[in-house]
Image: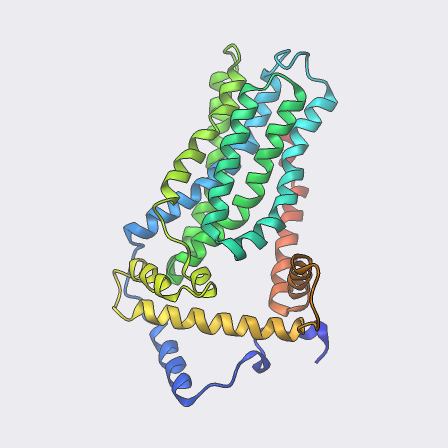
Length: 329
């Protein structure tokens, strides 16, 4: 089979199964059609809200800069030039771009929740740095730190929600987390209007970005890691306890069924990875770089991944071409 024709759906990806495994899979397929819950539980709503705060932070920190730039005046030792404004604005996007692939690797190694917690710390540090700085350089540094937080949180927070949500509510809850981004922008514009005429009001605009980050950090400390990551890390007992909370309103076997599905999906993913990236012989002096290369290969050469990438790039391109980004800044 040609390398660029590899697809996840092929039978090559399946490991040999015993008759018992086949019977379990058949039973699972019938059980998956049943839906016992009509609305997400309080636990699901709470974790979705907690993770969705990342969207508010994303929207707030990208929206507040437009009001900030017109309110700073000479507070940073001199009136801002066009170059100053460009550096302050673009530094966030640049460091968000740098952070995204790094966040993906860290999310697999250390956990989804851990990456969001680190992003919260960066959000708080970046907001505080901007609020107290007295120079353009300090402002650029603060915006860069916020960019690192945006790059990590915007990637991992939806993943955290999707891996913890029951399948019947997953699309709705992830969509709500994306809507929080727009909500954060609205809050930024309203606060910008209220604080623009106050002396040093811009410092309050950027500094208030630390409040949602601190709130999210506290909430996530009380919430679990995702079952999928726990299974990958060999912590199935903890994953089972998490699934019992997620599916508390359904049948007693719902959590075990999902746990079996996660195991099977991970096996298929590992089999696909072995086909696309055959194991190399000898010691690898750059394991992190090799892992990154493997991820890029799977992204480009696995059929399902490649189609998702094309759709995502098309959506981003159309979003930029519609012209709304320029007026926002």
